[in-house]
Image (cartoon, rainbow, N blue to C red):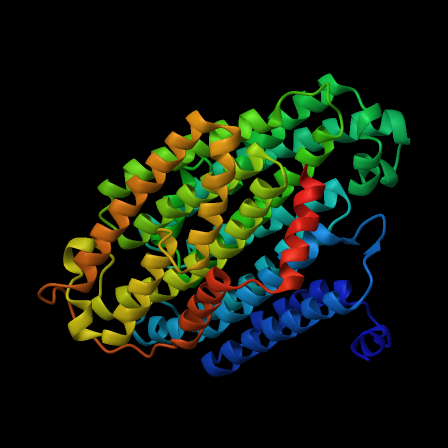
Length: 487
């Protein structure tokens, strides 16, 4: 019944996922009223989510430019869902920023328009069956987030935006060169033109492609898209962007954009996996993953800004997921996919809490935030649950993904597993220490009331809790299918 209704639509769901945010951009750019623009932003994000959910009810499709397959369908739904809940959270957060004068009505129009541009670009990157079109999607998403990072127009925000722009441009430029190399290699086998840029065609012919050029291309792609993933040592833009931009953008950056960049890397990993004569991509990903994890674990102890703290936590968790995909195999890939999903839900929830904590206390400095359980008990509960979930304590879903990863890593890479566990323990100690500092003790800083929307925060945490106790069979089948594709 649902499939018949969806099939009767004049436009396919994959097209709607892209068209809705695209049409919303000029509309939101023209509206300055806070309530109207915030409501339309939520509406556009909700319609995008509805279109994404329709993808689950229709057969998979492919074309020269767009594809809906096992790999991207759930990530599109996840991206649309987090985009929708973040838009709901953003409505209350941005309202406070307007009241305090941090944002003007003109910047409000710009903020909401760029929010939809960013969501549409990420969906384009995920749905692209064309390596060039995927690059365009990531480039547009990067430019949109760069402009939103500097939206407060303070010296620190502009510096962070420029740093993000410069490093992001270098990364995306290297990824562009890697994309050209992939096209050159594939066109010699598939033939010139659009078909030589199609993911499914490239993967199908991977064994016949030149392994040396494939390996060279992946090096450029790894550095280029690895910058977007936030892997060390390509991470330098990420802490500043999180600290100086609006908190809803921090939630989307950590929860979604890092995933999209990692997705792009994994697509190229599938190409190299089809040609045994190429470089050992797994070893490279394992190395970068562990370096990112251990580096971030140590850096967490030295953070003095609450948003920078969780920016480094994002580097840690993308390192964990990258390590999982580097190991490869059904169980490790399953763990990596689950970890990407849980990190998206939990880290965005943490930033929902952190944004309102900073508004309530009037600062992001950890030294000036304390006694949250006394001044804002509901916010304190949400923040504490988010930290407990992100450090991998049971019964939340992050614990399940990390448990699966450690279990399979012990049988495949026992020495590296020791490093993995050490990094996890490092991060756990740092974040629990900071949680205790924020939640307990004598109240420090201001204690202003905030017009907070706690629904997105607790919905995300509830989903992470359910995933730690029980995964729906349909979701398990999806994880298994994609894990098999990744090799």
